[in-house]
View (cartoon, helix red, strand yellow):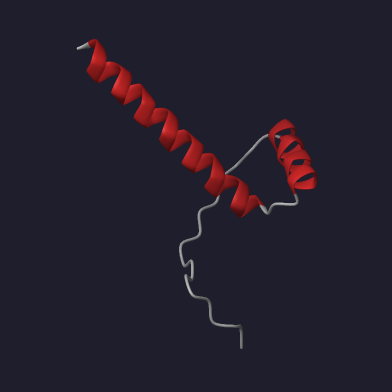
Amino acid sequence: MGRMRENPRYNVISMRISDEERERLQQIMETTSMSVSDIMREAMELFTVRLEKGREADQKAA
């Protein structure tokens, strides 16, 4: 039986990527020693920040 985690993650998402994207992902994994899941989590955080900055800029322009 697996170990219990404090914040278990139950949702699995899969996606198709090109060979070039897979190579870039592999390079990121080797450079950072991060897992694919951790890389994708960080990418979502960065994307969220970018979206929020865009919304703030739009509100200032209005």
